[in-house]
Image (tube, rainbow, N blue to C red; front, side, top):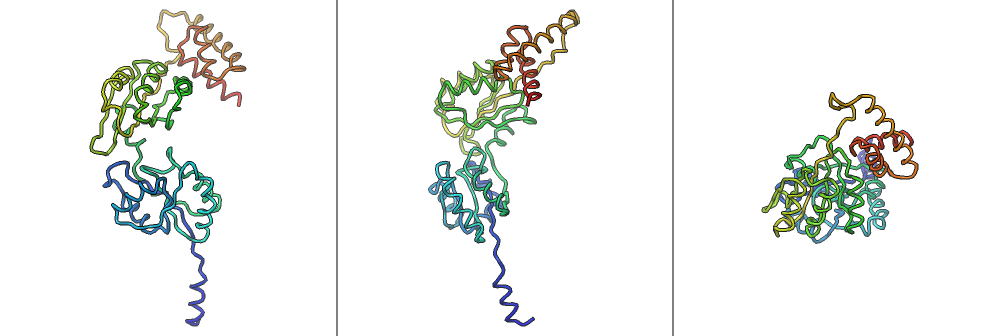
Length: 307
């Protein structure tokens, strides 16, 4: 093959675009990985949640790249343009204000568009406040669910908490500092005052703090201590303890237990025709005297069977 032909073939190679989902520090800049720094340095453009905040991060890293804002209010509008750039062969790095994108942050629409278009989507893993809080909360982390931010309106927040009251897995929430006191008070009502919890604030920063205790204790501290209600907060709450209906004392009549179970099943089965699982369970527990956690587990089981 002649040199001219080889040159022609090289120039005709189509550059393949790529989307890098890059985790950035949640506080301490030293937590940025070498791969994350490399990805940001190689990108043609960086999609950011806030151009000012990300601009400060990149300036601290000595990286100069074009920035394009991608936040909750323009994500769907910007998606097609960014997808076109990916199809044209550009490499785009996606970052949020802090931590891992998409975890209660923008970016899902762009990732979905890129994946559907067969564009390579790479993860550059790193910090997330969810894992950081779980690692130091001293609350079981083998099974957990992340609920993001609770509703800002008190009535809606209390309804959501009531729906989660029987969740057996550890719960993780983000919360704004000016709402943490009232949210903890609502959690104490919904989950019980003795439920174990931890409030982590300013993780990896100079004033990193962890408050551990019962929901009642934490709610009281939040109402009294100004420092408690400052900074970025992640709340970890232990799941509801699970009891087994069959674990009964020796002096309880097994026939009575069987009758109680049969009545519970009947009540929940009827209630589920008109109510969600949580309310059907509450009704079943009130009528039969069975614990709410057992009633809720049965209601969930019945609900899944009906799907």
